[in-house]
Every structure is written in C-alpha cells, then in structure tokens.
Image 1 (cartoon, rainbow, N blue to C red):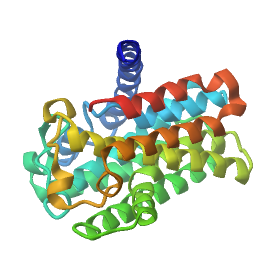
Image 2: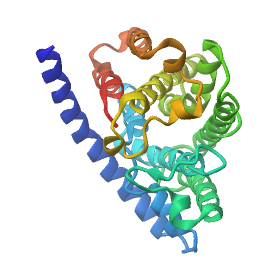
Image 3: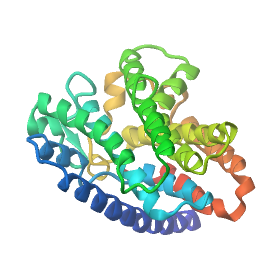
Length: 304
C-alpha cells in the first residue's frame, strides 16, 4: 500500500507539471486569438468561463495521441484550444439553473452567477462558434480540406449527437431506474464524444483510413467513459474544495450513474477494466504509448 501511495504521489506531481505547461501554452494561444478579434460586450463573460480553465486533460489526450502519430506540438495546441472552447461552453451551459443548477465552477462562482443567465448562454454559444473559428484560422498550418473535416467532427461531438444529446439524456434520466447500457450510451455522448474527437483529430490530420480513424474514435469514447466515472467517483466521495465544485450532487438529484447502479467499489473495478482494454488496443504502439498510459492512470486517481 505504501509503495502504491508513493507511486501515485509521483504520478500526480509529474502530471501536474505536464498539465500546467499545456495550460500555459493553450491559454497563451487563446488570449492572443481573442485579443486579435474585435471587442464585444460578451468577451468578459467568455474569458471568465474560459480562463484560467480546468486541468486540460482533453488537450493532454490530444497531445498523447498526436505524439503517437508524430504531429507537431504547435498544431496540437491550436486544436486543443478549440477543444477547450467547446469544453468551456458545455460547462457554462451545464451550470445553468435549467440544467444542473450549479453555482460554483472551478472554485469560483459559475458564469451565470457572475454575469446573469442570458449573458452566460450567449457567452457559451460564442465559445462554441469560436472553436470553429480557431480550426479555420491561418495559424493552423494544415490543408483546408482537413480543417473542414476537423470542424465537421468537432461540431458533431458538441451537438445533438454528442455533448448536447448526452446532456438531454442525463437530465431525462434523473430519478429513474436506467439500465447499464443506457447509462454508458449517455456518458459516451455527454463526455466521450469530445474525447473521441481528441483521439481522432491526429488521425484525420495524417489522412488515415476511415477504419483507423474509427479505431481512435472508439479509444476516445472509452477514455471519456473512464473520465466520467472518475468524475462521478469524485462527486460521490470527493472534497468540494479540492474539486472546485460542490460534491454529493449526483445522489441528491438521483442522477443515473454507474456508481449508483454498480456501487462504488464495482465502479472502480469497471474503470480498471476500461484502462486494461484501452492499453491492450494501444499495445501495437509499444513504448510510444507510455504517455497515454500515465494519463489514464491520472484520470482514475485524481482528486479534482
């Protein structure tokens, strides 16, 4: 147990350093991108929801897969910036009273508490469209056809087939007995689809076959499922101060989660199985997949 605790402490320290660098580089790009645009009354609310931002785990996964396919760091940071805009938009909307009604996000008042509900909705919408602007911008040095493909896939991941559709199911499943396959479907839409884009984007840039792109999409869906269960574990037993948001909400609202269905310990076992399956699928990349293995380990063992 002591050796495991020491190992996890080293892992968390190592990952914190890597995630902080990704956050600095991503936020630097995003601030420059916003500052170059014409100003508007919505920009303060957009920046508030976007900065300093979360852990940047989605961008880390993007970089991990990108390194497997030898894509340069700057390209991945720009695509990661678009991903973070989508993630921020989803959180701003998720916190609204008509959704999950959360007043605290990332250790500070939610965007709608700070700026009002209507401004929060519009700021979220603006971040969603800004993600597409980033992918279309001249700073992303890839083929125009590839940019269009990335925009199409990112849009699908955030709309009714992805985040929005998953959120709809999440709300409609509250206080109901939902079978395991339906919960997994909901969580793969709500959380998995954006991770799926992060894993598929490098393959799209490399003009890989549809079969290979699908392979990485499925990897991402399972990473997203892992992330969502880990997030629910934090809500179940985590500390509100460390998490930067209220915990214990899922039980109070009767959320359909795998923890509620399987129990806390069995949910952890299910996470372990997901990690084993992902690592097995990435085995062909050998030692090159070391970074993503560490990230998966971090996702399950983080406390926020």
